[in-house]
Length: 362
Image 1 (cartoon, rainbow, N blue to C red):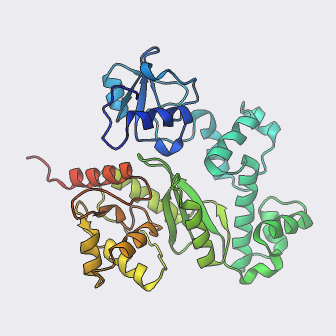
Image 2 (cartoon, helix red, strand yellow):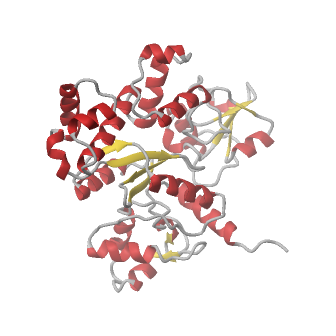
Image 3 (cartoon, rainbow, N blue to C red):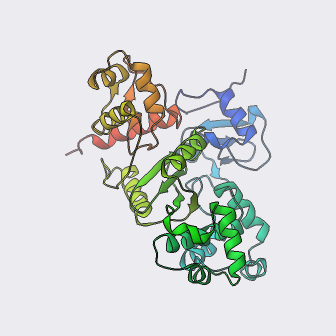
């Protein structure tokens, strides 16, 4: 058994935190910080530095706690930054990608910008699940599909507008990604755009059409892949990296929510499901900010008092973390259970809403 100082909430044991540190487990990002007594620095759980011995570490709930204890931030894992934020060396490149989404970057051009291509590739694989060049290709193809499916461009025009010099190469790449040639895509659904939104609780994955948000989940949720498959089946289309006005609106509203300046969301979202799921999700959306109800109460209010377990499953099937506030449902005895993003996030969200809803001191 390990005995280490900790100021973290009683949701994790020191053993669990030390194992997460040794495994560099990203699921524990935001749950704790570790101070290394032999160096005087503090780190994230995922820090790539060599792991210290168990008796040389202290655990802290927040970065402020670690700073107050006299530790200084690690220069490798940058614990004072929001987890997932682009490192400084990459930010100029990302800004150029956003301003010129159809540009075809070569490794030579990256090196001209003093950026090592392999470093960019590793970052994109870690944070987007694909290489930098695959990310660029997919964005160009998604834009082309949108132009073709809405009738705003023909195949040749879409290819040229999105940086393809070879029409045959464009047709082949399009077919490989979307499963059909571009000539048949006028009647196909536009791709669902996916992006990341950085929050104090870690990155979230958002998926959206031009009309609605389709999904909002924490990036490390184990059920994320299942939820993405369900969304793809509902909309009968493919995912592609990118952004649109709704994603930008949601990012702003989440920023306001985490700052304590927003208690509800106005962004448009669509949550198709079974009749039972829809009833549960509709009731969830009406739980007031800063308040909670029990699973038993929720089941009773939708007219199914004996269906508490089914209500719990419907909560787990909710694809809209925070937007549809399933974190506001607790056990009848007041304890926490059943949150896909992790109980520590559920506790954090409830604490945040409770504190933010208190009247300001005179």
